[in-house]
Image (cartoon, rainbow, N blue to C red; front, side):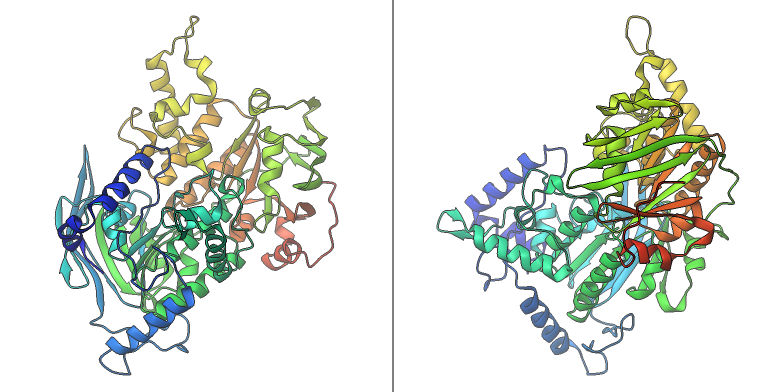
Length: 593
């Protein structure tokens, strides 16, 4: 595969095709979500650009890994135990030395060094804002470094675009998903690489090849399904399938399990083990540190844009990694609970239903309570919250807030009644990413910072935003910083600020710590407890059972659209919750008491 220099030298060979690729890429980059990139060169034996038979590719990679190894002792074997892959110490795929990247007023990376070997999973850990995403964007060609060198497969190169990096065999699974909502799953997986029969797209082969990618991941999604109808977790699996279809030698996984359940995560890990044995180098970024023991060979820690350490994972501990990440020791994962639920029912939901989405659901939320929603992907947790918030209209049932029966036909009605919903996809549904922090904080209550003529009082807006920046510890250079430039944890705090400024009485948090580092998670947990202590009713929807057990008073368990039961958190366990969530216990619709 060509490296960046070769790509530039060979451009005269395919001028028309390249111009078309670049034009399409330029047009796609004007959309609200970054577009997937089209590789310029593909395997010569492929039936069409980007066509992939995963089994064949893995066999070829495994044979190549054995052939290139200096001796049998170094070669990764198919029956090697998980987490114990042996790789050739000299089989270095990628090395970065002294990489620096500056943005106006910020040094995002300060002389960072990193290396990746064939057949290993090298994790990069750090708090939000540590520089992990910037480093990955440099490797994948989205940014050019200001200083430093990149050695890829023995050649120094700087990729001028993600097209060049992809052509050279580097693929990335972004934390913020890069899918086109109005296209199908199959069209997204092979976007701009569709199989053709003459001048027409071969739809049958497109669906068949997409189905093979999805089957490999154990995902029950029809290739013809429109992406906009999928949940965030399902979209994440489509993103993984798309990356695997590129036949990459370096695969960057940025928070690939942040929205996945334990079952889906386990299936993904099986694929990672297969890729390791086939000689693929994997850069793995995740804030779920406990899961790394299953797949990670080495771990590099970054803090404040600087390199801190690299260790063989089995020779270190999670506590040491966390201490290096945050610069201090975190003794407890969850803060002590100070809130105590009262007997007063704040929100009452009675037989709320949406045909073909979820069955009649009934539950109560008490003042000062944190109620958890648990269940597998597609169980109906998010759908129930969206129906209460008015984002999706229910077909029946009642919602009461205190003694008042509510009529909610849109989110505006819910907001006026003091009900707020923090979406699991904060960038798509929670933030206006191109607006400043101050504008986002006041977005749900603009009237409060406007004069009687309807004009915004910017000094008042800035003062309000600064108050929440100080209260919640939002790390931003100023209230005028564009929200897109903040780290994930700080973006989440901005969304929370928006609803706090609106004086909401009930808050639905959908995956509130998705893609957030351990230090920021603890701060979010403290905030949830503080909100409950103020008498606000909190519903936490989470795929992380330790989070559910550590932060809630009760947990409502969903299975395939049914609210199966409601359990007292102190009297239950992960095993019991999974027992109900997996459908092993017959549906027993809870009344919510």
